[in-house]
Image (cartoon, rainbow, N blue to C red):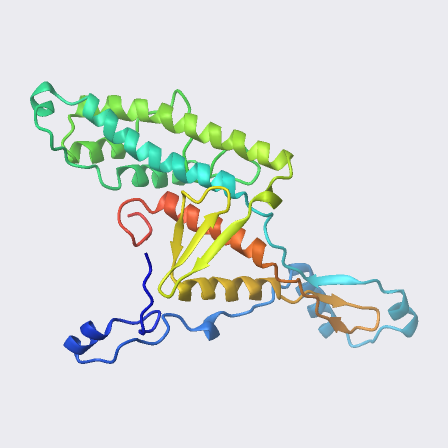
Length: 301
């Protein structure tokens, strides 16, 4: 339940402010003027400009009339993401973390099993994810590979870092090796399921039916699918506005076109709030998939 207050959306409460002897509320946590808009010029156009500067002779009027329109700088957004695929990826990553805990409990020694408490292997899964993709980077050509959940081969060697993380949590070396080997199979199954879902979504035109609902509160925004409100994601209102501004500026990136009369024309793309909300949902779901333990969502060490 969200109760309306009289304080600023990004500020502190009046009671805390009174104790700290400061004013309630504070300035925005980001500066919109820092979002730079830089036009990207291809190398071919750079060489053309250099050659034009070196040559002192000017082209004739007939050559200008025959010149065709040449795109100097264009920026295209990536294809629209699939919210359903990101939800499956988020659910799968959370499921894998829970399965690791169950596997560790099932492979504990009888002496340790009597003790109900078990030390959690904090960030063990996330560190293995990072190490896996550093050793096996995903390229755009590998459509079956998932960028978040590893898909290890059956003959892949056990990661010693993964085993050490489980040993640090109290598992024996033998039990940790068995748990990691079984966890590899679960991770591969999850990655293949996501790949299958992504292929199915690419073949059919169901992305337009993925309507994302954003409910604005004073201190937070609820981002969820209209057909699946169970997987509710949160974002700060200021962060919401920041992403919106950055997304809008990305759409409004100039497309310089060299016309026959050497005039430049700027073309802009219309802002679609529903498409922005779909991409926002996918970004939040992706962060939720990789953030692991805690709430900072910082890079894994």
